Image: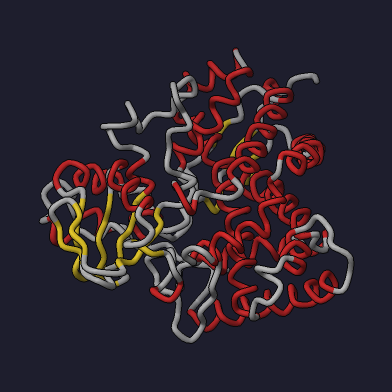
Length: 424
């Protein structure tokens, strides 16, 4: 299905520096599709770091745009809940007739127990075993790229590496692994944005996902425990009695979490290095910078633009009165460029001090379960890229996902010049 290209005229006619703040709706997908949201957040950080949007594309909500305020909201899960019964973790409410509980959209103690059921997948022992596998796959993917031809980096590298990883984590049928990519895209897509036409299509495809994974569950629950995510859930007390929609919710959490962060950071890193060629030069001269560069790429990209909480009671925050039921949106994409915390945050700086001081994985109770795995995949792919290639050229601006939640790329067209191929 071709992507819907939203006409940019309307937002280009706006001047975010003179537009009345009460007219700000930073959650419009069109702003993210055209990478046009940055000045809106710059102004919010300066003039209205806690901002009320009364009639946005998704209804009314509070925007939290500064690093320190996001940290405060994240830390107070009693007042600011992520529970699905309030609508979940994205600005777009879960549909009342299609609620998918998942542990990221739960509060303690249930959150802690369900998270613990799958925690072993990112244990030190598991990661050590996965590292060997990831490196072999990265080598194979890179060794089969065309030289001197234009191709889509998103599809050939970013999606392929992360989808192979997901298939391994779930012990999913290898030849059908691209189903995982599709379900991830469907779960987070904006209706009419080129992935799905409407909510009925989303429901239909996600029910297919549930049916497919129910077969796998039934296989694993009747077999001895194994090291994959489905087996872990099938044999853990906290998750073995999930109802079908809760199982689907946790599956989608793990699929999206395992896919979008890494996939869009692999693409975003190459795009950023092309935007900042001096940094690319530093990397080529010193591949030892890769471990420091990886968290800086994840900060600069911020693969998930926001997370949402819901106020469980009336609460005063920074002089503003939040009411019970208010939606509160933490804009990670803004906090990661907050001038008070991140010096020259619009730039990719691969030698940045304290590069892990970013919000891309969240903070506190709901900090991303798979952050070490995401870091490892990015580190390995860049180590292997640098063994093989010099500069990989981005030949045109990327086509971006139509979403204010997933901040990612549909296409990133690149070329590897023949003179940039290294012997290894």
